[in-house]
Image (cartoon, rainbow, N blue to C red; front, top):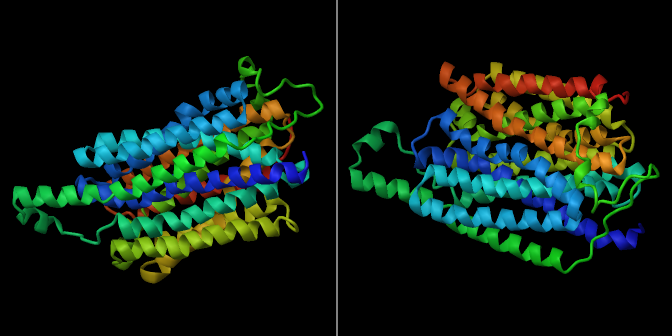
Length: 420
């Protein structure tokens, strides 16, 4: 495929990376917000992440099979339709002030994002020279970083009210006043998600009217992408570097989600920072660092092997999480703020290293399993919530992502090596 023939497809597919960043990086806003609106504890509020990430586990294989049967473009279209539908369902969920309805809406959005990720990650890898696949994937993922910046800043501005009543103040309210307050908190999500729905539908139209190449299979004689629905199997696990990629992706995603999901609670706990200021700090500093980490990581990979950079960044994340757990005040807070910069390259690098050496057909199946590994984001935050409730300290709960980054460190040191 020529650069000219892939330019528009690369631009459009890259935009998808921005989309699912909105889903994941609005969760750190929704968790403290719905915690107020529904009077939840840390464990209960962590179910927002569970709803988002359990969808990846449930939908990833069907998404991979659908992509095999119908091709990349139709996979993208179905993903966008599900995403828009889920975003639209948030509006009646707010009106009904139903937490279960909210969780269901988030699940549907995540189902759409699962289709998009299952397609976009391997697709961007084949839209160009194989030698530059890791750099191209990291570049596309940089726009995921842009979404990670925008989501918490806008979410903090338009969703979080900044009103944080103490338990005693809430208890002193009459039933009518309390109900009005809680409903007003729930209703703030309506306009943002209506806008998201409109943007996704616009993108859907652009994809409908754009011709996308399906890519070429390698020289091993594998079947065409439209005819291989029956070839799904677990045989890709014969590659140990892929198996370790799935394991590492599980723990990395869990760590990433956990670091962000409880950040606002953590900032209040260690530095007494209000929710709006914490949301702004998360978006304008931590997530800007995440985005810059993606761009700088892409640049550094011209001179440093991806696995080596992954190992160094994994070690730094372990040390920063340790500092966030054992120190206090601004030292603890800014240690945690620095973590996203170094975890920024982990998902695309693990993904790219995991599918290295696989045929085009194996890559499509492997992509499903790597996306399924995102279920780590459904489990690790729940563990953090349970730790927080058990020891009454959200700070201590950050031991959990620290342990997760140790697994990523191992993958960068040894697990990535190709052998059957």
